[in-house]
Image 1 (spheres, one colour):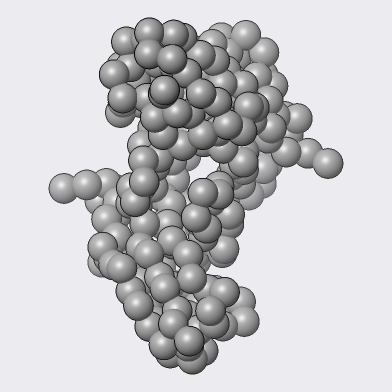
Image 2 (cartoon, rainbow over the protein chains, first blue to last red):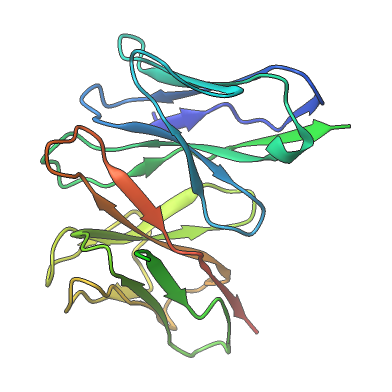
Length: 112
Length: 116
């Protein structure tokens, strides 16, 4: 089993749609969780952190479910500019010598 | 402004040549990472370093080498032993601020390497 697995995508949705991505992780002791956005031929940029209590930023909502070991990202009222690849990132337990682990990314295309 | 600087942004290499990608950060971060990304793929870890003068192999270290002589610098050398080096290379650094439960991760803008 991969350490971090994402919905494979690609997701093609009409403008205004609500779309959700999931990402599962295998290490129950993982410490921090993030969603990153990556535009074509650019570096990933932080979209939002993910907390058990949920985290909302405008049209974006991220959620962590530690019991089931997954994180989710919900995008409401999607815009054309939301088209990108979304990466989930999991950091190791505190003190671990392991590194950041990235999901392979989910590609989203919002269509006019 | 603090950040990570990668150079060059675009690099062309002839087969059989070694090339070095620069990664410099002025964030005072201890941990630094090199990733490779192929078209339509996720990030794969090449090497990482937790502190100065120490580094560890990642998942795809063969054909690559690194050094960490200074905290600010983590250059990556793509050697002639790397058979398929054409890819997008990303450098990152990480810190967990004192008293925080959360990591802060920064990326450089990436370097595109093409073998010609």
